[in-house]
Image (cartoon, rainbow, N blue to C red; front, side, top):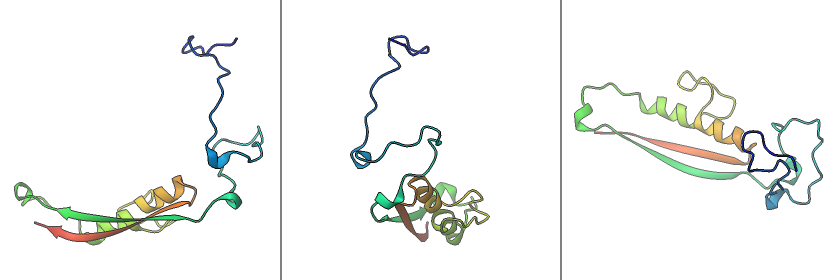
Length: 115
């Protein structure tokens, strides 16, 4: 039985657990990259999580400059594909959408600084 060269205790041919939502789907083409998106025709609708960000500025940080509420809103909630200066690689909303292949969306409301 072949063994993992990095951990000789583990065989290379261990069975792989398949999540329930992927069971019954046709096997992926072996030449396809593992980074490809799943078959969206079998997916359910997008799930939306509402998120609240409360900005606090503590007394011992009174001299510290802070970003505006609008800048934080842009960092958290810019739509997928928008790249504001505060989030040049995408917002938190964009990241969650991309990592879930569009199946999960986070919508954030940011309230102004509380001092």
